[in-house]
Image 1: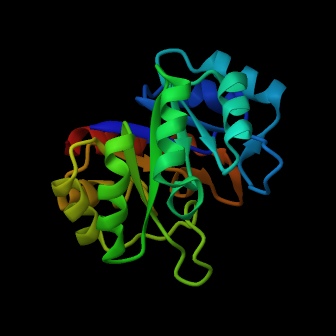
Image 2: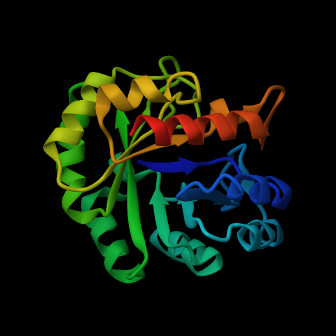
Length: 220
């Protein structure tokens, strides 16, 4: 079971998270787009220096090809995670990016809003190395970092239908990751909101991170 953790915003937290040996750690470079977990260039470099033994995932919220390519150049990740492919970059845009950044792999967020998730997943799977299924907020519609779970039956359907590995995200933490794995059988699981510190979502909680990693691994 692949364990992916997001929301690392300090070098101190990066060292702590790396000590629990997750497979993937996600960072969000500031691209001039409003988001609570982004970091500037110097902070990003300090974080990356602590992530030995983990595959680095760089999230891009941009739908501008040149901006996304600059992010890859600056972060130099093993995996580029594009959050706004559906309704943004589109299948052709992702395919062009994938060719341009090879051998860096590409992960595409597929919003889980209902039956349409399967159509989106089938459309993007051929041009992706990974799919990440994430919750669309029930009120705002914003995808990602909502802390909300979605109907896992839709995610299970995607896992069964596509040939690329699927990372399950959306409201996962140490208290529900085992149930999520049992219900969906994904290739991996992702956590951000529910492994953050109470009262400071930009910082990771060591106990929550430890329990999430342990329970994900023992539930595989």
